[in-house]
Length: 105
Image 1 (cartoon, rainbow, N blue to C red):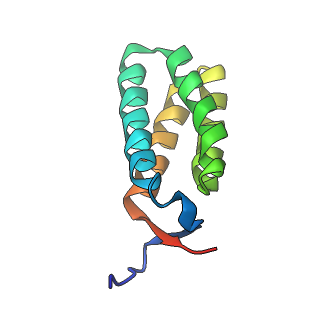
Image 2 (cartoon, helix red, strand yellow; image 1 turned 60 degrees about the horizontal axis):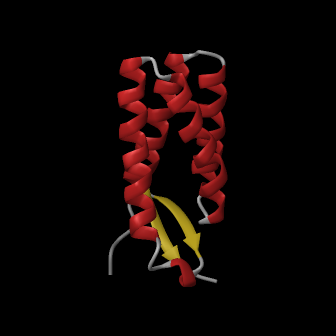
C-alpha cells in the first residue's frame, strides 16, 4: 500500500481504463517533450495541435486538468504567446509529477 503525500493530486479513474492509463501517461509526457522542442523552434502550429489533442483526450480518460491545460496551450499558441505555453508546460509537468490515480467506479 502506498501512502498519499500532501501534494498528491488524486484522480479517480474507472477501473476499466486501468490497462490504458500507463501508456496514456507516457504519451502525455511525450507530448510535453514535443511541445518543449516546438517552443525552441517557435513552432506554434505543432504546439496548437498538441494542445487541441490534449483538450480532447484528457477528459476522456478522466483527467479534466489535462484537458483544461490543453485548452490553455492551444489558446496560447493561437495568440503567439510562448511564455504562456511555457507556463502551461510547467503546470502540466507538475501535475503529472504529483497525480495519483485511484481506480474506482
